[in-house]
Image (cartoon, rainbow, N blue to C red; front, side, top):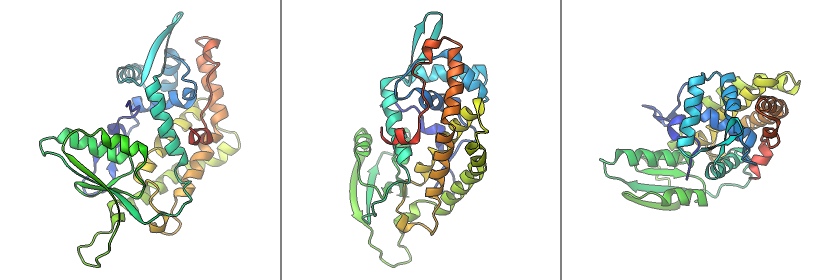
Amino acid sequence: MVSPFEIEEIFPDVAAGSRLPRRQEANPAQGLAATLVADYTLPTRAWLPTAAIMTLLGESGVSAAGARAAISRLARRGVLESSRHGRHSAYRLTREAAAELSAGGAWIARFGTRDEPWDGCWTLVAFSLPQEQSSPRRTLRGQLRWLGFAPLYDGLWISPDLLNPTVRQRLSAVALGAMTVFRAEHVDLATATNRDPIEAWDIAAISRHYEAFDRRWGPLLPDVRAGLVSGSAAVRARAEIMDTYRRIPLLDPQLPIELMPADWPRARAREVFTAVYDGLAEQAEEHVRAVVGESGDHFRADIAAHKVARMAAA
């Protein structure tokens, strides 16, 4: 399975004293490149001229050397594949990366839309890996983060969700140590040592993350609705809000609303994301088509801005 985004790009480690993963300060160029390519070519796997990808990355503040390195690294990882089109080199998503991005995009787009009540059960993953196997332990923990789990204890990770096919597939790939998966209810012992499963997540910190998201993107909504954001600014805003919003399901993997504080901001965040990402789609697509067209009109045919509804239907 090819992952277009390395777990280290989003959550390099677990911050000391916190149950939330630490986040890097700057958006890595590789993640930005993967987002830009997917935002406008994912359904068709259209070819993008190398010069166009370089230009789009440059407009987002990535140096020419950084853009070349990001494209090269994505190709080595099997996320992009290259081809020659006359005088122009071009890249597109590999089939495996496109499938991974489609699944991830559907997960992101459907986040916050679950209406069915929670059944009160938790999925538990208990594992034991040799202490000397630090790299596999870190990889497994990263995968569990991606899948919406959080550590109740060091070797016991939990999620309120049912064990879906993606989780089964990822966990089945673990080759070292021992692992057991349960689906169970929590029994409250009403003792001082009892720990509620929801405490595996830092609810206050997640709330602050939502607040920061709203402070950053809420003020842009009037300009988006008035059509005042266009060109490269629209492309940058869509890439940035996607990069920011795709972290939220990892921090708050649709934790049961029954367990959350009143007025939990999950729905508001989804509304803001949809309004900005979809609201700038037409303007961003026009700009990407113009940039791509500089390398030849035949590259423009399959360029189309992704939207939330189409992502959710993938």
